[in-house]
Image 1 (cartoon, rainbow, N blue to C red):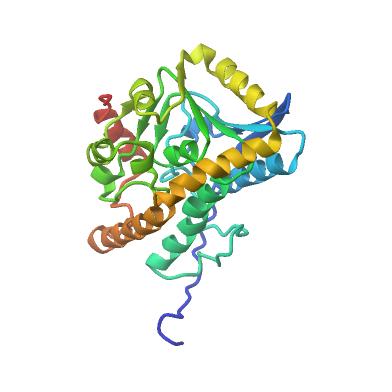
Image 2: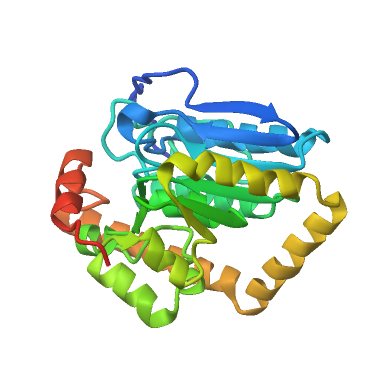
Length: 302
C-alpha cells in the first residue's frame, strides 16, 4: 500500500456502559431540557454521551414547539470533562459520523485521535454553537476541561454559587487547553493565560466578573433562575433570536475565533503526538483517578 494510505485493524475494545440513557430529554412549556445523565462519573463525556447530546440538540431544533434549550448536568457536578478513565470510555468504538469525516478506529497512530476529535470535540461543539435557537448552560459544581466546551457553546451561562471552572490540561498533560479553544474569547488574554498555565479553579463569581458567566445564584435557586430566562427566550420572536445569535457569532468570527481554534487544534494534537513519543500515551499517562487527585490538590480557587 502507498505510504500514508495504511489502515489498521480496529481494536476490540467494547465499552461497559453503565446506562443506556446518558442524556435525558424533556420539553416543558416550550423549553427543551437536555440533561447529561452520568452522575456516578460526574457526567464525564464519552462518545455515547456526545452522540446522545447531538441527537437531543437536533430533536430540539426540529421541534417547532421548542423556543429555547437548556443544557444541564445531573447530580453534584455539571461535567468533569472528557471521559479518560471510566468503564464506558469508548475511544475505540466507531459511531455513525454526523459530519463529513471518515471512520477513526482504523486509522494509525496520531491520525486516529485527530480524526475522532475533529468530529466529537471541535466539530460537534461548532455544530451546537450554531443552533438557531437560544441555549442556556445551567452549571453547578465542577465545569472542567471538556465541560467548558459544552458550557461555552451555549449562548448564556447561569451558574450556582458553588460552581467552578477549570482547564488543567496544561500542567497535567502539556496540552494547550481543550479542543474547542475559546479561552481567549471567554476571558481577557492575560487571564486566559493564567487559567491555562496554572490550571487552577475559577469561581463562578470571578467568571461573572469577566463576563464568562451571565448570572450567579444559590444552588437551590439555579433551576428556577434558569427556567425564568429560558421562558423569556422561548417566548421571544423565533427569527429574531436566530438572527441575533448569528450577528454576535459573526462578530466573533471577524475577530478570528474559528481560525484561532483551527490553529490551536493542531497545536493540541502536536502535544498529543509528543506525549505518545515521550510517554507512550497521548495524555501522558494521566488517568481519571490521577486527574481527580491532582485537581483536588490544585483546588484553590482563582
